[in-house]
Image 1 (cartoon, one colour):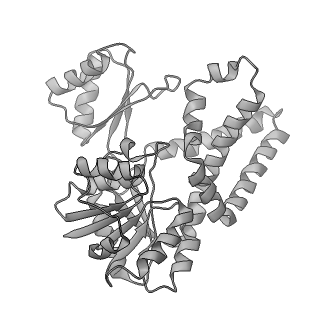
Image 2 (cartoon, rainbow, N blue to C red; image 1 turned 135 degrees about the horizontal axis):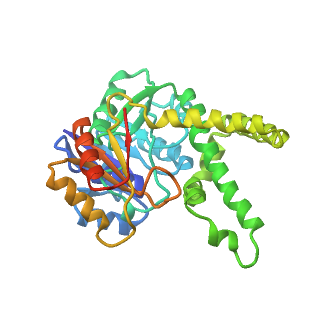
Length: 357
């Protein structure tokens, strides 16, 4: 049985609390946040057992999650180092690792740097839920103390996430390329349209699903991203320079149709390889289904599958109808359910796109 501590009961901390409280391996969840209202709501909803008012309350904890902006993680970790019991492990969910891991090496503290590879532009405990981590990668950084890593792994498994252990320097370079620079690009696209738009805001009015999809993350917390860019600037800069170089190269050959075609062909081939990739057996079979944008459409699809004994694992609504992928994502526990669902929907004249493993 584990006693869990959470510092920062916002969206991510709230998702951790809501998920772990349901585990029979978790005895207590202690939570601290500067927002007293979030703590009281979580206690009322029975998603935490104890509200922390003094840091000494964390003495009982076996694992403590630091769910604060990156710039505050060191401060809280150092504060806890003189309070927690000897075998307590402190972990974080920060998007950068190098500075934190290296700074804490000299302290007598069991720290395992971590980063769940999932998030949201949402913020606040009231927007959190208990499904965020299911089947998502949860990075843990290598540590000389294998027992500490194993303890965090056990708790991560209770989040229904997939723990992956890698070197902290490698982590920072990877996330610079797949998370940090893309966020900078998304923010840049939004600012570009804002600067180019006319006084009637026609660009804002006409910006449809494609633009909204690729810029969704620009709605994330600015303070969080200020901290991330500062902490990981040494990895972000070379990746950003590579992206700028690619843009400049495209600008130089924009009148060359063959080079343009190859540019888009190369990106399509690599991006398409993401979709069908089964990783560690956790990627579920899926269908994309076109449904009418009217009352009862979703219920009709679910009813059809239920009547035919098809077990649905997850349902996702796609708001963008510009893509081929459809308006509804259905995820199944088995290929058998996927096949059965495809047959039922196809026979009922739905346009269905099967994603194979």
